[in-house]
Image (cartoon, rainbow, N blue to C red; front, side, top):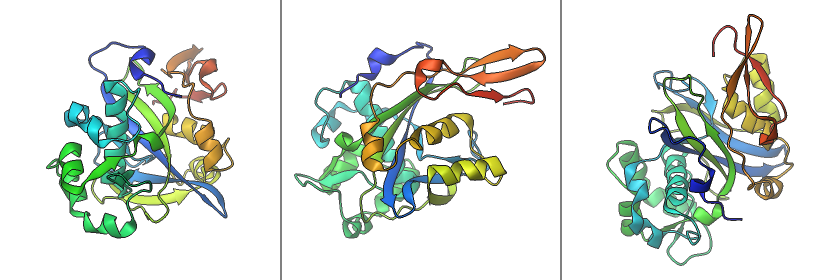
Length: 269
C-alpha cells in the first residue's frame, strides 16, 4: 500500500526538522532481531541512547534526479521519496548496511561489492557525498520498494528541538553484517525486542520513549515477514502531557496502535 506523507501531516510548523529512521530486521534462531546503535554521548539528541539508525533528511535527498535511481518510486510523492532515501542513506552512514541494488539487478549489493565501495561511507559521514553522486558513480538503484512504512512520530510542542520522523522497516541483506560508524554511534548490536526491553527495564540500556514504543510494536511480530506485513495504515503520533495532581505523564493517542502508554515524566523528560 502506497502512502503519501503529505497527506499525513498534522503540523505545518516550519521549525519541525524532517528525519527518518529504519528498523533493519532479520530472522535468527533466537527470533526476530533488529539492528540498533548507541548514540555518542556528545550528540545533541538522544545522547547515549540505544536507537535505530537514522537522522535528518538532507536537502540533496530531495533531488528529483534521484527518481531515476530508485526501484519502487512510482506513486510516491517527492516528500515520501526523500524520507525513504534519507533512511537508506542514514542506515548506510551509521551501520554500513546498504539497501541498494546494482542497476538492473534483483538482489541487494553483495558484501564483496559493499567492501569495494566502502570509501563512500566516510564521504557521507563527512558530508562530502550525495545520494545522486553515489548512484551515478557506482551504477546503483536504491531499494525504496524494500521499505515498509512502520510509524510516524512528531516531537511534542514543548520540546526545544522538534522532529517530524518517519520510521521504516526493511529486511536486512543476508550478507551485510552491520557495524556502527564510531562517530555518531559508538556501539551497535543485533537484539531481539524482548531483550532490548528487558535491558531498558533493568537500567543497563537507555531507550527513549518513541524508540521503546516502536520496539514494543515490533515485538508483536514473530518474524520479518510478519513485521513487514504489519506496515501501513500508520497513524501519526504526537505525544502530549497529562497532569494528574503534582505528577506529569507522557501520553499518546489511543488509536495509534501502541496500546495506552502512560510514562511518568514528573522528574523531567
